[in-house]
Length: 588
Ligand code: ADP
Image 1 (cartoon, rainbow, N blue to C red):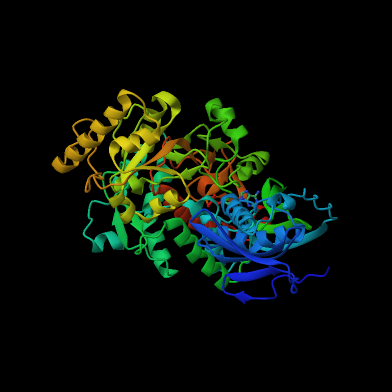
Image 2 (image 1 turned 135 degrees about the vertical axis):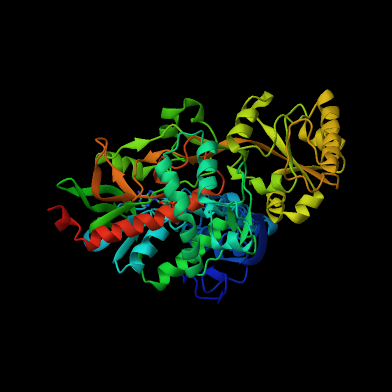
């Protein structure tokens, strides 16, 4: 039977995938399931033995990630007549949501979804074309650092190729919720925040990072942060709101005006520039090796489904992100992390570090792996600090608080690890749900336990015996602490504007999860990669989470974004200067 894909209706997000003609006995069915951000609704036209059409009629999945699954997965399900197809890489939760919505639709018409579980044959291996390309600057990895470096180098007149192994750009940067730390910015001056100086930013970053970071890199980060914010304004990405972030002595955290998550906001703004500048972005393309000539980086090897690329470039920039999804590598530094849950996207496997090491690069602080204290263990979803900043608290399975819930990530994570049962609960109330939109997502996805009273919530959390009364006492004490403004028990002094007295009440089971790998490729303040013998590797630059030395033993919330913008710009500029100076000829 012939079929036509996607030609029937193409109204905004709702494209029907499937056969143009459907038999009279096919039923039109609707179904729904929860994706990453909320419900995904589908319409399915099917008989018990064939799915004729699939249309995603409504969804709120993240543009550029979940939306890729929304476009691709109905096609694969339809083409294979199977729900046993692979999820779209990096968009597993959305993919599961789509499959479950189709199952829901089929079941609503009495059709057994088991009829659509055929094993999907692996695609036949294709003979790949060998392709040689040439450019001034090749950038490997299109997260925040790679997008920034590419835009900067292109603005300097370079011909850039940007490689990304996932089906979409953004990497872990897309997951940054809070903001970008920066000091001595125009925005801060306008707001009268005179203490947000470069010196204070450096000291806070050093102190909170256990004083093991490379001071020169931290100085570079802080000194260039104000100009980086100006540059963001110049590309239509203003960050006009400034607040405090966990543990810092002053306000450095610059946020988008509408309060939207900073990662999605900046990646979207950078993508607009990438498109405007016509940068050649190759997604689904994995770099595997740095090409060297006479001790100098002169390009990379990469491949996609159909091509083996040899890309010759005057400068190579590595912006491949961290290794928070590479459990073998993390466990080689800390065996207790082998089975930990991670907040990282699946592409965070440390490829750039391995590629750089293969050409003699040194690494620093590889064993410094940051845990985030409030991670939902089922799938690594992060409950960001903003939930605690708006008043949530953390209790253990005895119903008790055990730490200043808004201390640094390292302090709270370590305190949690010492609690019985290996997990805790973050507690909030209906008032907070009304204030903080992302908590509604957690409720929709079924992560929140609820109760109309503290006792009922405790029972639903499975607390037993005296833990129930402990929990009730904890809540009452906390509400009194909020009223008096003094947390006599644990010394918390922020996120205490509202108490937790508005029913119904909510608990989400959380534990520490891997969040950021602070170590990586050794660089200098010009983003040049340093070899194990301490020399600069000509032509090779690196920026962002793939590098080490900037965050020391504990990354401050808001410093990853500052890192990828500041060092992304520096890497783009240095790579551009090197290309201008002649690249290969320069070393000759
Ligand atoms: P940063 O914050 O440093 O920019 P991100 O995690 O946001 O880090 O981005 C790194 C990007 O690099 C991710 O999108 C990831 O998929 C991509 N990447 C990682 N390894 C490779 C590789 N071998 N080839 C191409 N892209 C890669």
